[in-house]
Amino acid sequence: MTARTLHLRMSKLLVGCLVLAIAATGALVVTMIAGFPQKPGPPPGQPGVMPGPPPDQRPLAVLVLLTGLVVLAWLAVLVVSARDRILHQLGEDTPAPADRAQIRDLLAEVRTELAADREREWQTITERLLEYADQRETDGYLNGMRVATTGGEPLEANVRPLRRPPTQR
Image (cartoon, rainbow, N blue to C red):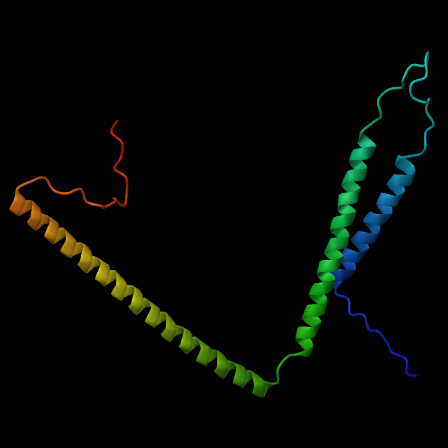
């Protein structure tokens, strides 16, 4: 059998996050032990015994704050660990200089194809807008001719203004 060695590559950010997470976990444990000792109290509902004062809520607030800090610290450790692994794998997969030239050529091809597609789309949009403008112009001309020949009121146009007129003060 061969022994496998495990190399841990830890960035400074990961070490810092681990130290913070361990410190936050330790602070939470110490707070749990020191801040919440078991205090025996009178059983509830005994006649003749006055109930004690309400419990202090400050230790509970500290506990909630520390629990949130622990969760965030360990989440940061997970995220930074995943980031380091991804960067490490990307570093191993760096292409050779010949591959880089090939990648550059492929990118240039894709850019020219995208530019051609964009130009075709603009042409299509322009043609559609010109057709719409021609139709609106024709409709306006025909409506004007109808009004001029019949001498009546102009038909209600189905035109919406781009901006609302300002309100009169």
